[in-house]
Length: 424
Ligand code: HEM
Image (tube, rainbow, N blue to C red; front, side):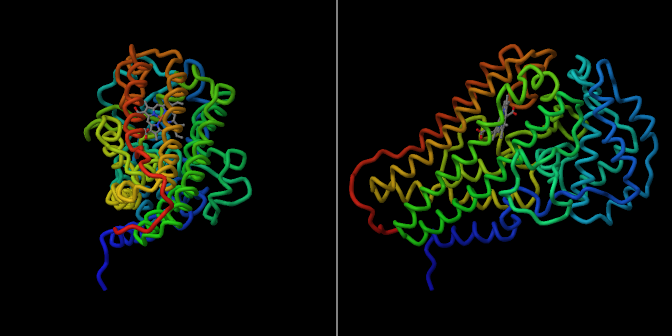
């Protein structure tokens, strides 16, 4: 039987979804992140547990402490890495990333010297297993959103390794596992990091509705397309709500975020493999999925940075997003060619909802970047924003470009006809 191009595309994304994302979990781990590692990793976990009291101490400085703890590499650790299960490997990566990032920044707020650092020599006991693990995982040797946030949580009522439902992942139920700050900052850090987890949890519905939409377009089923656009819009709004409710001064103090929280999840240092980014919102999968299904154009700096940042995402996530890239023009082209008012309006409402997230991110992000910006990267993220003097203006302009691209996806409503089937 002849398969139309839309059917081939729909099958491709459905296949990629089934192959590369755990069912019902989207860009989150397949099970609750594991709690424990084999004994040989105990000293790494203990060091992580002790980090907040040392790293968060005024005037602290953790390099001498970590240098003495990890002055020697134990080959048993690298051998043990080879025997770990996939989720244990992610846990070990999260632990090592946390130690390495705190070592890189040394204390919080970091000294000027940490911003100016050109090279970093990690103690062998961290350097060797971290390098080995990154190689085994086919990941760059740096913290990523995946390890520092998306695999770094627990649920009070479910042990590590157990199955969970994305609906259970709410700020109330989640705990951030490996933090690096003492109270009261620990709570701001926790809310910030868990916002990414919660966003991906609500993003599961965005992915599923995106796939439904692609399928209904391939089937040329106008009633189904209308309903999919409606449910996709609801899913995007629900995902947006996570940002609106969490990113507020009452839960995360902007000055503390800028000075104490922001630097540590970025890396921004060349350690021989080019400048590595570290964790960032650029690595959030559900938003990229919504961009792809709505066919948002990708010409400005920011979407190029998002594409570049995919190398920090797990291989399966990249594969799924690459498949989504192939359907970019499918939905808007169908709607343009149909010229049907209800369809067009519902599609435009989805675009508006995505724009609303970007506007909130632009407004609140500017508020957070306004905090006390000490040091060459003080007002910046170390990635897209590099000029600390004009960080807010730079940020605003960059986000405005992306908002403009999002709005360009709007399709003019040309006819007020009833939904009809069209030739595709
Ligand atoms: C509150 C403080 C925040 C600030 C100042 C901020 C700043 C930025 C900046 C400067 C970028 C460009 C890349 C970079 O240099 O990192 C960016 C991108 C991004 N951020 Fe944030 N961000 C904040 C919070 C968040 C949160 C909580 C989320 C997700 C829940 C998020 C999601 C994203 C996404 C998805 C992008 C890619 C751009 C897009 O698709 O529109 N950000 N952010």
